[in-house]
Amino acid sequence: MTPDGADAERSSRRLSWDPDAYLDSLQPVGWRLGLERMHKLTTALGLPQNRFASIHVVGTNGKSSVTRMIAALLEAHGVGSGACLSPHTARWSERTLIYGEEIGAGQWSDAVATVATAVEGVDRSLEPGDAVSQFEAATAATFLALARARVKAAAIEAGLGGRLDATNTIPSRVTVLTSIGLDHTDWLGETELEIAAEKLAVLRDQTTLVLGRVSSEVAE
Image (tube, rainbow, N blue to C red; front, side):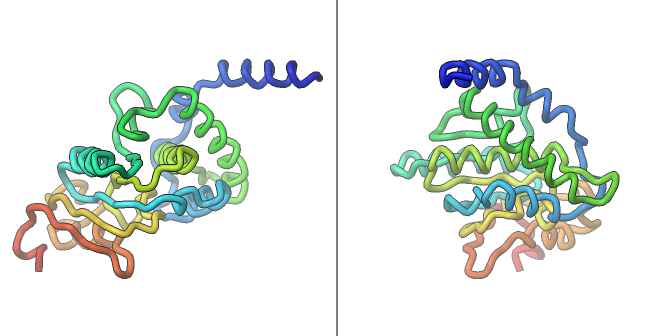
C-alpha cells in the first residue's frame, strides 16, 4: 500500500470509530473494587498521569465546580492546564478539558482508540469475568489526552470516594476536600469520619490539603 493509501485507510478508520459507543459498551463498574486494573492500564499507556502536575479534588458535593475553577485559575495565571471531570451529560468528551475547552473530537477519538487497544491486553491478564470498567477507561483516556496536549497541570475530580477510585493513580501535589456528607454509605462508610477517611486516602506524602466546609469533627 502506498503512503497515501495508508493515510487514507487511517482516516477512514478514524471516521468510523465511535469512542462513545466503545465506552458505553464497557461494564459500568468493575467486577471487584481495587486499583489493579487502573495501574495495569496506565502502565500499558506509559503512565501518562505522571507527565503533568495534578491537583486531586475529592468530596461529597461541589467537586466539578471546584475542579473547573482550579483549571480556570491556572489558565488565568498562565499555566497551561486541563481537567478531568465526571459525570458527563451528553458526550464522554465533556469529561476532559484542555486549555479551558472541551477536548476536540479528533483528540478524544485518538485517545480512546489508544486506550481501547491497551484495554484488550489488560483484560487478558485479569481473572475470568473481570475487565476494565467504563470509568477506568474514560479516566485513562483523559490522562492520555492531557499528557499528549502537554498541559503543565491538571485538576482531577474523583469519581466515587477516593481510596479505590480510578483517579487515585495520580501523583497529586495538592488535594482539595470540598465537603463531606452521608453519600454512598454502602460503599464508603456510615459516618462522616468513615467517609472522610475513604476520600482522604488519596493523600500523598508532602501533599498540601485544602479543606472546604466540613464539620469540626472531620477537620480535626
